[in-house]
Length: 87
Image (cartoon, rainbow, N blue to C red; front, side):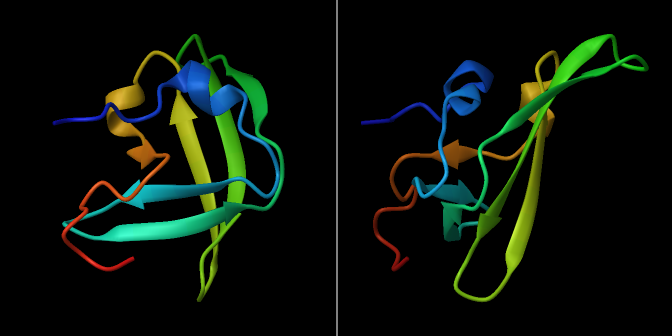
């Protein structure tokens, strides 16, 4: 069974201290939201963008997703996307 990744609209409502997962190259990266997401307008792309910070076990990560180009952004889930791997 496939579960969908979080959409741009889903990500607009994440909150500080939420725990999410970024799916990388066959790796789950667990992170905690450090600050609520911020929406801003990109004149160059004529689209809204969403940015937020997360904290992994090792580092702070800056996330950015463009509303009109979400397929180029991070693949964020509420659960580990690769369930047969350790998080």
